[in-house]
Image 1: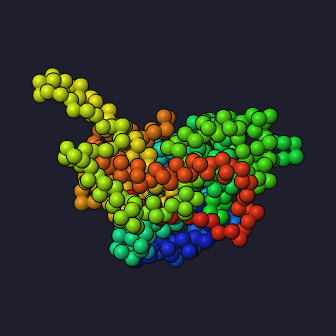
Image 2: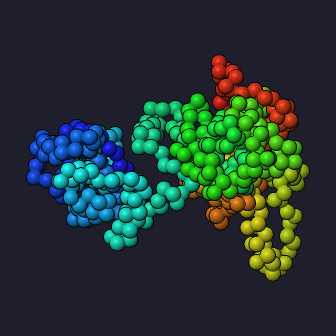
Image 3: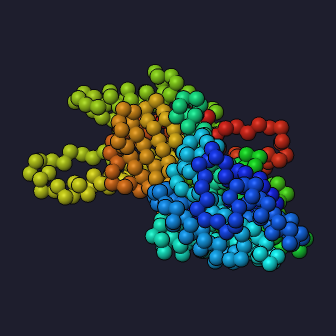
Length: 499
């Protein structure tokens, strides 16, 4: 179960919303005498008037069950709501536990889970105000205990994860745009919220537990403004981020505040070593690291530091990358070359792939070495998956999407799993899972890549990556910053790339 708690000043507005006839709402348990929104408003408000100094006596607790829990009975909803109130200390307060139907006319789609709303008067019957400090965390602890007691789906608490979930509004917007895309009303799939992209970047650049200087430098290379707050006494009080002109304090992102970067993500901070870099970042200057350190940064999380520099290469080599000219470049040309090199004595295959091997010999040897061949094939498949997954991930990263449909292939990335489909084939030809510790992609054992497909990806994407490497030294010397050029429009990463 998940929860969300708010406070307010108007019982009337809340009851009018929750008890609308169109929402198919029902009161599963009530700690008051009224039944209608008007009766409940008068009753709750009169009790709250005992303590006029409390300006916001309305407490609204929303509890959502996991989709895997299916339809939860009113009895369970009543029991769970009552237990939450009791353990939070609201045993002498007015309350109403209200159930909402999954099919809510206020939304564009039907909910995939049950949920309840709890309205509580924070003023007790004898005029005292209940202390509600740390209630968000206390509620999560209570729900974890109730999940076990009622045999419900176990959900991780917020402090047990490295990410903050999207807000309700962000989720609603994404679902709406996804529905429009599936209906053909949008040309492109919806983009994830900026907060999600920023958390992805922070997770990526901290995967090898860098120094604070490396951390700041890597984020700046990805277009993120890092803004440390430093006192006159050189004490770092906090850190915030800005991506796509949207600002986030570190505390609003998953383990991204200055203390949690060190305690949760393993980013090391030494004032003598890192303070100068933080001051440069606070002054909107680019942070550079030593060449030896920068060389190690190049390998972080699928070469993310390199693919960020493909922007310039893509602009200069669109004809090579996009495959618009069938006679000269792109996947179409690769397909043709693969077909020409496919068979025949006078036209042997010319693939330079490291996965090609010589003929294995006689049938007798083949029979004898079946086990060895199977092991070798699995190793070659794993190597091919590692290479193709890294290139595919780079394309998705540059296009700032988790799903991309090209003229020959479709790629999707979700929950650390990357899948690749060939057009006309319902079964993925590649399924890879991210290995953040070793900064690579691992085959799940279901992939069916061929050397021909690997060569297609090499010829299609590698030129842009190689050109980006050549630009590394040049771009490292640049110390421009978007804050110094507010009128300069940022180029979109990955323009023209297609699978």
